[in-house]
Amino acid sequence: MNSNAGWTLKSIKYLRLLGKTIAYTLNQWSLLETAKANGFEPYWYFRYLLEKLPKAITEDDHKALLPQSPVSGEGPANIS
Image 1 (cartoon, rainbow, N blue to C red):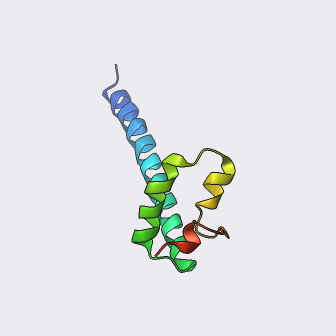
Image 2 (image 1 turned 45 degrees about the vertical axis):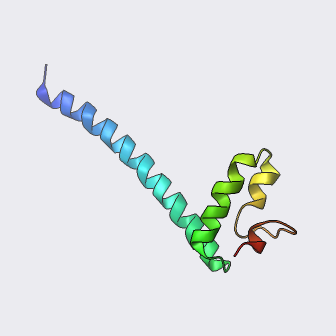
Image 3 (image 1 turned 90 degrees about the horizontal axis):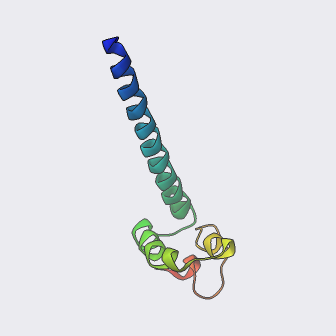
């Protein structure tokens, strides 16, 4: 067996993990920048998300949590 074959499989697994990590980080960064662009303090917006996200069930519930979503009542528009 070629010793390079084992390294190749390890490299592929590593690159897949790295790709997922990069995608996760970019999604967080995008959400952070969108929140800032819409006038939210990032700490409070992420805290709001962590409190409300577990209770979001429908697609509309999830959309209402987005920082650019026009929400009336209790929503991102009303966090401080």
